[in-house]
Image (cartoon, rainbow, N blue to C red):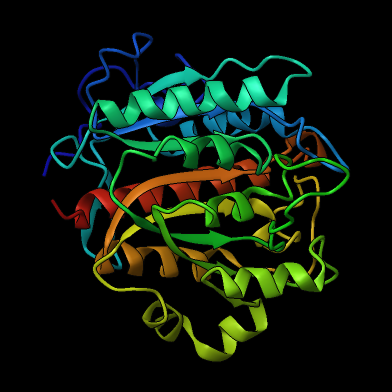
Length: 318
């Protein structure tokens, strides 16, 4: 396969338009033609402590340019596979959902609208948060789709039903998802430390179909055993909170929690699932770049997403 280094412009990471993976821009949401469509959801009104995840989509896009120039696809010598080639699938960036300042409900509805447009085009939504409340808008958009299983990577359970009248903040999304008749179950991985969800939240989660696995349990079981606990031949939606990773490699987030995952643990898990079933949507949330002046957290997010999308397209099922 020709690598393409000598043809066309070099297009270094710091040149050109800053779209996700330097993919094509699509501003007409009624004319999306892609296998994967990237939507920014720069909303952080759902946070309970440190804000700043509204700048997550922009930082992830910028970081993604590091991995997306000078060749057709990304060769992985360990797999002996070139991922993200043009013939495997097309990625477009459709920009951001409209966020209405101080109006959480309308903002979530706008995120839902964007995801619905992606699904109507037959594409897979890749949503860049934003705090974890953006997942509520994402999951709402699937109400006319076939049922699916949610795989949730996070330090926190995010299963609060209601607190002081709040039902749509970043502590609520997995509870709201579990209430949906088209969500067949949840696997919640990485949960640890002092949690924002009380014991009754864990009891409710298990009663409503959740399998909860901590980081230490994950490591004791091993990646393959964890994959085996997730339904086979299913449709999967991945929701990834960057604080599922250890703050030593992902400090740029609002609620860091020590004892988290390292990069390859999650990549190997998600890659295994791209072989085990069909991925129908992804969101990655809670990157708050102002808490990480090295840019490492955004780079981690971009690298993980590009590798997961590459494997998803390579192994996808019709």
